[in-house]
Image 1: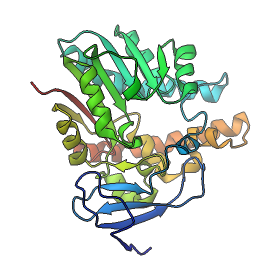
Image 2: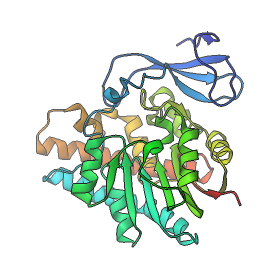
Image 3: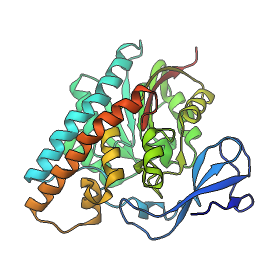
Image 4: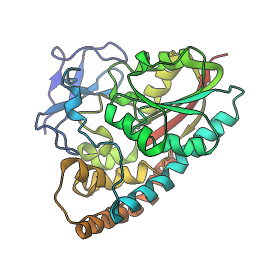
Length: 324
């Protein structure tokens, strides 16, 4: 595919305000098949930031987030196995957040932005932390309440019913790449956190080895839901500009990195994608497909661990606190 120069049609780069770009890819929704519309991935010729073009209008954005994109298990063997797996791999996130909170002198609510079905918060609450969730989907917030017993509201962070300096922690797992103004989200988190509170952010890493291997098939692009594709330096700079200092980074996620490898290999086998697309399959077929997908996850585990060892994992998790 040719990569035509793009200088006038796209808005300025959100990172450096430059107006010179090159088109890396033209893609549609490979994962959920919500649209056949083609989108471009543009690379800024000045700072190198990757972003989606055009950004979907806010009035139609919800059509790209179909019902059920969060996990709500059903009473069958395949779903019970999937929930057990999710509980296992989410422990990785719980440990990271637990360590951050226990090294903080702040005590208060832990707010998870983009909480989905609330399983992460349920596991964190079992560790003894007071928790609440926030999601733009009413259905997801309902699942969090009813299935996982987590108090959750449907709202964006700018309109969350949370007072200033009341949170000991604000977590954003795979949120900032989805929003039009990630800087505003970080500023809201800064306002809500207590002086020694902790911000935990995770985003896909556009400098990862998986992107180099899979190119336009890399699951982390997730067109058209991911508006900005952050590299390490992009997300660190954004967090620091919002008034935070970086404490810790983690380049491996047991939940996300091996599974991202498997989905990049075959979106047709991704369990959530199959469920969202309404693929017709019996219980036995679903179980077999899930097992094949799990084998791909296991096969991708050594590669995901190796890339993370060189700080090139397919996701990056960051702990930060307010600048002193």
